[in-house]
Amino acid sequence: MTITEAPVDADDIVTHKARMPHPAFVLEGGIDAISSINRAAQASGVPASLLHLVALRASQINGCSWCVVDHARQVLADRASHERVHAVAAWRDAPYFSAKERAVLEFTEVLTRLADHHDPISDELWEEMTSHFDRKQISGLLFEIGAINVWNRINAAIRQPAGAH
Image: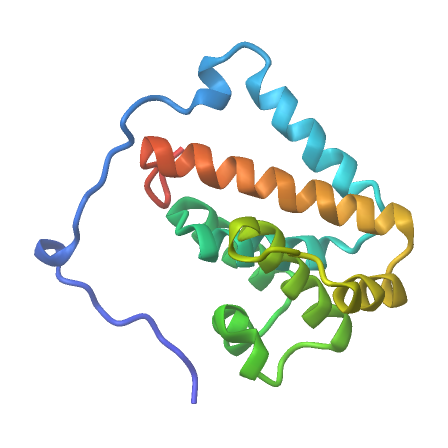
């Protein structure tokens, strides 16, 4: 069975507009500042496909529609199945993720939801991460998680709609 797009009645679509132009472009050097964090993460040796999963999961948690759509497209471009992309939000119970990916998804979740836990990164999770990644890669993942949370928070504040640039 393949997943197809259901027809949508134009009258059913809710149109959203951002509150203001994107601050990354309003503030001089804004886009360069955040993009440099992303570039550092990309240079860490972590595969782009894993960084895309990180960005998708954090964006789902933060409810950033623009980023969810954009990063789902990236994961699909990485040749992931539609089932895998749809299962990112429920990765714990889905059979589509390796132990390494599961560690990264948990790492992403706890760092995105810092206030939910007294000690967000348990010793067990840290040990799991160090069993899969070296310090440079963990640093890259920390940068990627931090950067996507910045993007998500800016987009949420201005209500940046999915598909808008």
